[in-house]
Length: 493
Image (cartoon, rainbow, N blue to C red; front, side, top):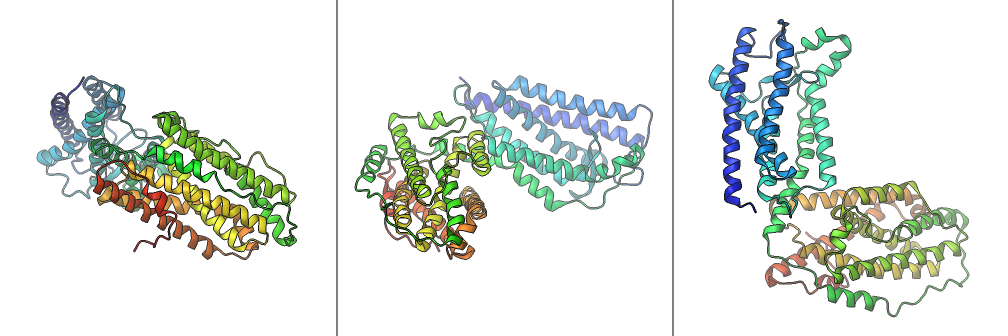
């Protein structure tokens, strides 16, 4: 078993290797640029034709990557830690390469000086600061992998942060190669003569932010690993779900209805979609790693099963509403298919968050539907579903508080920002699919999003309160959120 002291020695030795390799690299570049009179690369004819030099440079760049990858492989003990050592070595090498060029040549004069960063597959151009920022991110992320990954305890970001990071990497590559890509159709000579004058900093910083997602997730995971463990009072939640099944009066479906024709069609279309999505599809956790969460204890499995049993009950109620208005129970819809694919592919952590946000925006939908309902049984159905959603949201609040959702500092602001952003994204998707129904009933965009913001505010307020109570008591939660969601909650200031 590795120790932190042993890993620190490996990390330090690898840093020394990367610094030494950076000196070697900067010395070679010093020789080459002196030969072609291009110590400062950003000048006319920046890539002059010298016999054999171009092919030698391309092979040298590939050899550099092989060397850095090899030392990372030798230093690490798992595939993840090997990748971590590689990124640390790459980042340190990249930063000290410019440090030593400054020592040897006096260039770069500032971090905003242009440089040819790479030649594969086309020349990359950018200010010196840009690759140094990426290098800093690589060092931080790689160091986290080095020190916290273990063979029996994998330490790796989820699929969503990795997908966002890949998107950011492609965006950064486009920024670096934008000018050479535009020149490429005109031939190799045009590419050689490219001399950029404008760097797209806004796009690059967006790309850098996307590339930072895996690092931020790893930092949050470190925080969760080092904080005292808490867990929701699952026995209490089993009792609450069992109690919620009592005293439920079925809507009076036999009552005669009189829904205007101009309202009936969009209303029925909306109910059909909700009947499919609200438990009518796969009423369970379906992420590729869902069993890791669900199977952590028998009590948690029972609570999750009770949660989704209520979702199936919502599908039954919605099916009764569809039948009442003469509709059909649909079995597929493009939005539901896309929703399920995201839940499966992006992992259980993302699935739980997106389900929480879906229940928040669905609560806003059902409140508006209940308020404007032209049909008594439909209004009664909304009341039953809203009663269940309040319990579900209280459970998610307790779950997140016990899991140590960050409350303060940059990590707290990061979590809150992404929660609000994804919440409004989910609300927008729902509005696109169901706006015809809500507007036909007499609602509006302002009313609907007002309810969405109210629900998001209630949830965040309750979550902050539950987290504070956990911190003060320094023990397992007794499900205070269940009481909180049953009472009026003021919006946070």
